[in-house]
Image 1 (cartoon, rainbow, N blue to C red):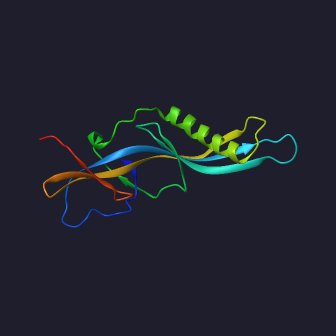
Image 2: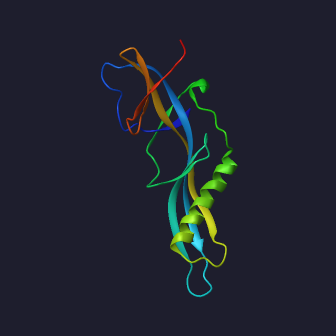
Image 3: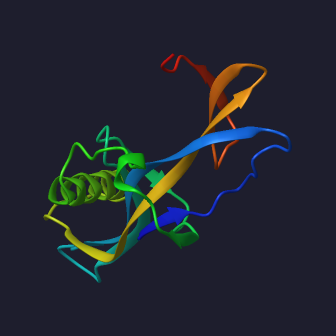
Length: 148
């Protein structure tokens, strides 16, 4: 069982879905506490998404809504980085964001408030004898060459 991000779009009517693939991400809610020489500490919170296949790190607005689904392992894109490395990348990103907002003299304290592994769905479809992959969140599609 995996947690998938709830699709924003539906598969278009009359389209043949060949398969669904799942792309892995870690989503973190992180709090950075900036210690100051004088006065109260300042803090900053944010959401960071780490792409577990390409090691890309992005900021997000919130935690995504998810659905729990049972998926065969062969439909999940393999992870290329460990969850430990993903945590380090996420913390580093939030410290960078904090450094752009505050003048930091002492090393900040970084806390992970919440984290969750989620998967983004992509549909492989056939339309007019061509094969496409469709992003379930944006609806973007791209034609693909796929085995004969």
